[in-house]
Image 1 (cartoon, rainbow, N blue to C red):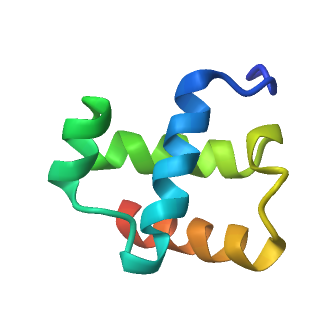
Image 2: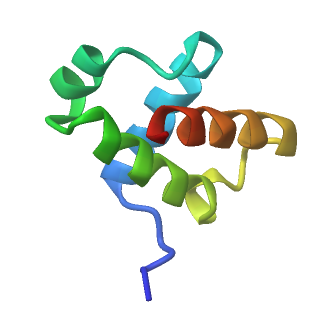
Length: 75
């Protein structure tokens, strides 16, 4: 089972997601430069973070919209 205590990477992924969700989640290039991850890996991780304790401060509407972006970018 995944540890539910937020870590620094989770917080950074969430902060990036919060900054970019209105713009479709950020470009693949920006994600790679920021995290060294493929966009797919980033959005998979963000989806997990959104379901965890690290995202508790988000309102439900924002969380749902960010989750929808993850799903769109993953498919």
